[in-house]
Image (tube, rainbow, N blue to C red; front, side, top):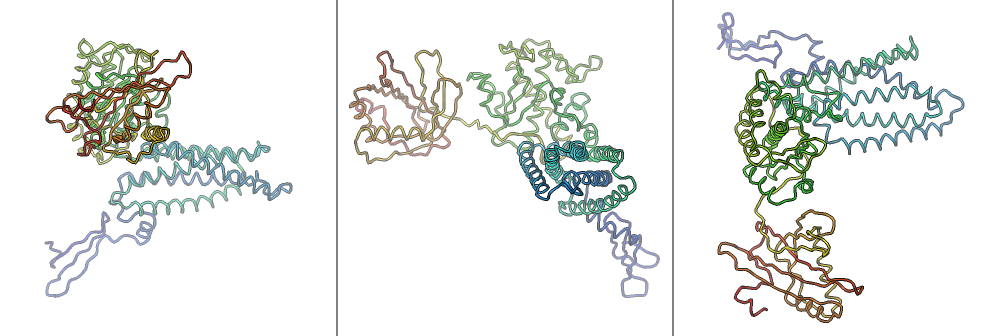
Length: 631
């Protein structure tokens, strides 16, 4: 309770962060309350704030809002002036003011340039749409630079008079790309500025600011054209100011969400100095202009490897197809929602994410990939800045030096590419790095939250492949081996092709089969091909009824060009197993087209997941006790 002079203050109100306050006072010897106001704002200032600033400013927006808007307003002013000067040359190029130009030619030129702009907008959204969120500041700057380049082409139209249509098509395409990149990145920055979920209000006030600036800049441009005419010096001066103002605007933004360049700088600072940098420090040093171009990959410079998140295991089967290797990798990351694979020949670190991966596990996987990449470079004596300081090495640098001298940490590799690396990490080293991550990541996560980073989401570029490490039980295996090949190769066969083959055999036998194909469980089938060496799982497979199998035997017996022998083997199952494993070996001879042709041997295997198997047993089942009867 406040005492105001001789009265009693019951309530006090304050309007946001403004100095305006209201006191509700009960004066002595009165029964009614009296309202006293202090710090009442200026009428013009209040009116200006309500029109051009979001409601609740400055509490409803981020701290970097006003700095960004000041530079953004300046760049919009410069851009409008340059656009007005360029429009004058575009109208002159399509024939405005010329007696020789026809309306039809001008219309065709205008339609062609608009069509090229539409195509460019679609293609850019398809190729770069996923990068706009992660690198919003970079693409915001690139969009404005591209807009300036398009206006330079339009100003040069009088010089290239015979190629007016071509130049207009190119410049319109560039401006269309600017529209997509600029609009998308503006939304990302608006989402950052809106702290109270007031994106619509922030966006509306930003549009009001830009409209007012464009209005003032348009009249200024008309005045300059009247005084100076088509001045090339003025045009290029405005372009330089436009680029400088844009650079200052994106530098003023302090994003608190981790993307790849910001996160890898956080990790690098932590490994070198054992501190977690706050968002403002990282944003000031974030590369914007020349990032991820050629050999300037930031992850390649910091940890020696290029990191890819969410890739498919199929890409890696060409390098390490052996089951023993992948089984050991699976054991290392058994308690993780991801797995790592380092291709030392190409210097690429692949992160395989699990189907239940979260934001936290994805960030942990990236941190793990950076550490493993640095240690692989250490065992191959590749100099990196993180452990190059020999005078006062930090704990992680000491770990790298210790691992360099340890022979158990490496294994010789038979695949030496352009990287020149001769060693790959051993199984013991993978487990050692995993223990480091288990100890360090909780501390890093806590430090990131305390310094102001937003860990509820991330802006890392992640592909959509997710792996499942659930147990899969082998039931039937199908492997085709050519006689002139030393090792089996594999290909994928769809369920539709299997059904079509079965139906074609039934029709050729001229017998009516009333039983339908019973799909009793979802299985996964692997079949071989002559070229690829992949293993692909397909669901489901088909079980034929007894009548169909009997008809198939009659068909094979009646054919003079085919012969078959069928062997059925079954091994006893364990007591705790819910399903039985069967091995069927079919030896089918190929139809003889030439006298010198030889039959092929076909072995079949399928794999099924016990998680998706229904309790119903297949329609054709042979128990060990009934084996003699069926044979």
